[in-house]
Image (tube, rainbow, N blue to C red; front, side):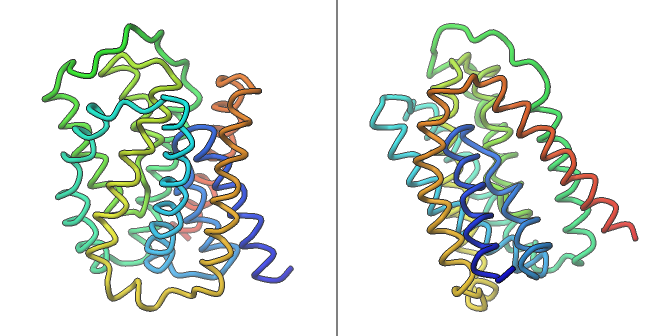
Amino acid sequence: MSALVLALFAGAVVGLALGALGGGGSVLAVPALIYLLGFTPAAATTAALIIVTATSLTALYAHARTGDVRWKAGALFAAAGLLPAAAAGAAAARLPQAVLTAAFAAVAALAAVAMLRPRPAPGPAADGVRPAKAAGTGAGLGALTGLLGVGGGFLAVPALVTVLAFEMQAAVGTSLLVISANSLASLTTRGATAAGVDWAVVGPFAGAAILGAWDGKRLAAKVTGILLQRTFGVTLLAVAVFMLADALT
């Protein structure tokens, strides 16, 4: 199968995940870039950031049109993560490839567990609840984004539900604002690796992901959120096990 076909297929899956779940695109993009398209872990994390930035901005627009973005809370999360994302992005280039792969596998496993666990019942919306805790969570998400090329949406969604008592739709939409900001901040520190990106692969991948994000938004309105979460969680857990085994052998 040609690299172009693989990139289009993987991009569509990544876009569906981001559009439907408000996260998870990057934790699928990185292993797809490594194992399907032959990228090194360092190059894959940079390429994933480019793809996820473009896709999450598209998905953010789609969710904003339906009023599912809480801008105040999202800005707090995002602002707290900007500096950690930039600092971790600079550090990522100095880490061994095996360490990046193992760390990514561990984060993917954590994401799978978060998706498979039952969501707490949402309370009433409250943009100003626990700002210190919200900022701390945002800083942690920013660091993950910079280090591993993940947008952090798979952790932002449950955090917005539990910390700020958002309903699921608002958490999904707001997480896309956080992903976009963190990814952009991390990209600013990856000039050297970004210069070597294979645009013949990344371009079609990103294009398919952007189209997939619109389909994901429509899919989320038709399929129960629990089914989407569990399907994604099982898939992600399998990816995490495979990557961890690869890093340790």
